[in-house]
Length: 430
Image (tube, rainbow, N blue to C red; front, side):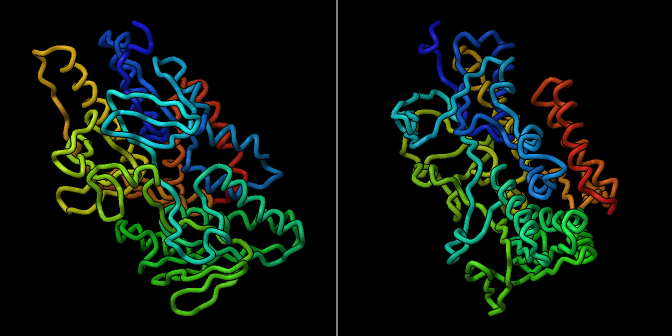
């Protein structure tokens, strides 16, 4: 069967969930002998996947320890390599629009692609909450280039002879806590390379605690650790305005800075804003049950069943009614559910006598690791908590396990060891 005659299973976005679901569907259809009838298409505007949990380390690695090329090799992975052994078509294109009714995906180069099955895994975009001056005078920590820009900005100030570098981090979720703590660990190295260079770090959070939404024990341990690192913490304070050199808080306090890092929020990708899907209050499509996104009205006929996963969708915990956290582990679990359910739909379409056996997504407490400077991390596995060096060791094992899941073992181990060697030089035992 010609490629153009095959039915298209299209995945939008090649982040943690998007890549996982593409790989799983490809393996399942190949095992079923259906790969000659279906084409799996993975679409992303970038030709690589960024391992975002490493970005805080990229942003705080000395230039004498590693240049940008070395950091790029351990934090980003070419998608063509990750799917080369699988029947997956990779399209590196910018999506301009999606017609869920006709089943058309429109690209920036004026080409289109018709889908038969669609999975939305587009991640999220930075949310500046319309705070005046924030987008112009802050640096986000969302991409590899953001991380390098943060590093270069701090390094340039140190080279210029600035003795006291003030850094403001907006948002004390996991990303904000990680980067703030690692700045303080990096400070020791900068003091050696540039005489009398000091980093003063201020962490600002609108909620009443750091790591809002996490277990109270985790919050307590994280707060204690941050204070031990001499990080100034403002909780219950929201940034109202940002100028070139200072952030003004809701209380009227003015916090001066040389560098402002923004990690205070994300929003649904603008591409999804006009999609005719049922949405929650923040604009994210609601996924339910089998990870299906429903049309905004029952009488609206979509081209096919639409599945969603990861940060770009909202899945409410049936027990609490609250959205589950947007963490990588949740996206990876959801990818397994979506892959199973789409293949069940395909098996049903291939045989009129087959009744699909869908799996309902049952959200639970996903394990997580939050590094807080140097060789110190807080980790949670079920009811067990680790903190300190044991948590940091677990962080490394989680990273290695992910690499094993997306590439050959020898390559995964080589990249992991290279990254470990680079980043461990910045760390001091915490």
